[in-house]
Image (tube, rainbow, N blue to C red; front, side, top):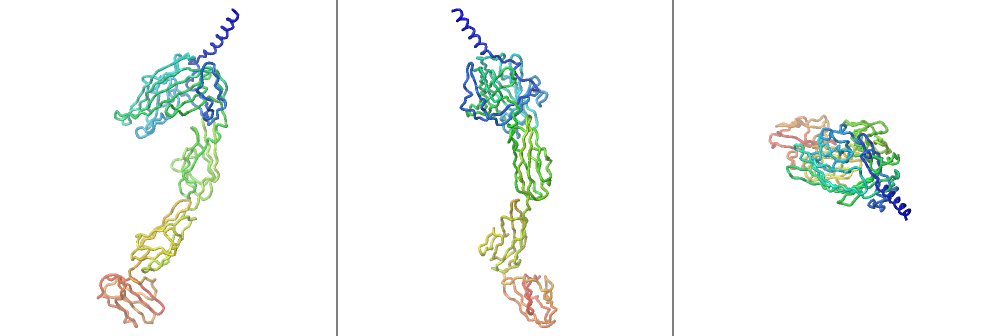
Length: 528
């Protein structure tokens, strides 16, 4: 009987000693430490992370890896927030506090600051940069994460509150409560290895607020954190964060070794334009996963220039190409723990830009005369768009329209018209406008190009008009007013007939029509 009791006691003590794994401050990170971790794909469910208890076995060995990152634990003096957190043990970069726009800018370069002692690990506040100003939110009631030694069955409850104000930016405030329990111990297996561990479950009910003029806009930040801690590892072996409002996993990451495959297909980019013309500006933008620490762009052939202060190391360089052709683009990105590159062959295509040009069958049609417009544009034009200013009194004929390459039109309204042609190709549009290009007069007559031997002068005229001709044949003269009515006719036989008195005519615009043999001239006369 004594032997049985001794065996039972030994088994109990053995089980109890296993249960009493203790995590100490020595098992926590230090300033200047680095942690390589992998972000896991949420593909290991229905293997649940919620199961727990004494002597539990968590097997997450099949987690898929999305990418890797390296996290640094900075000494406060190496951050912009040293004055606010000089007593902290280290600061950890994190997201931008989910505060969105603040005072016309967004929060950036965010850090959480921790103070580690032999008794506890405490979150003492957060820092963020807003409008280039370092803003520290120092907690007056601090957020205690662990008390040491940390053992199975330990519980912890507490609250935190902190705020910081900048004139004209408002006040940033964070409040919340944390309830933690060491709810499990045993072994955990991840792609990194198998470890004896404690599991801590922490429920955080909190909110972040932006306060302007006493009015706050709370942003809920309720979450549950599951953390597996192992002796001597200094970092969480696995951490899972769940958004309590949506019950969705927002983060799964585990301590890991360098895996080159985790960086494959991380590098990526796009362009605001894939097809452009010589001289156009193109912007390339990295869309690489994670947080690259460096960029290197290579474009071939080398017939381009970086502009707007950008270069081959910019995250979003701007380029101008000097020659037509196809250009391949390679982006290499570096991370704290690895690198990757992506090549897109013939990604940018530089083509000759469209250049609008056109002609017209006559610039001086009479009413209802059919007129043809002829496209003379260059550059692989894809579309045409014609416009007349004013846009009344024009009819398209023969099945053509304002988007035809060579439209046929008829003017049923007198006046002076501008003509505009807008053409496009893959590189973009180009527009040509010719002002006062078409003159349509209300008479049935239209102007003809002047015959060198047959003309009149002066123009404008006052009382006398002279007819000029170097040939001997008779000249038929007609003067026509703007209503199309003939107001004067005469056959000019000799030199004496070539001086015409027009002092009795009303002041205005007339047409002078001269016919001599097979030659004809018809031009406007301005009578002052």
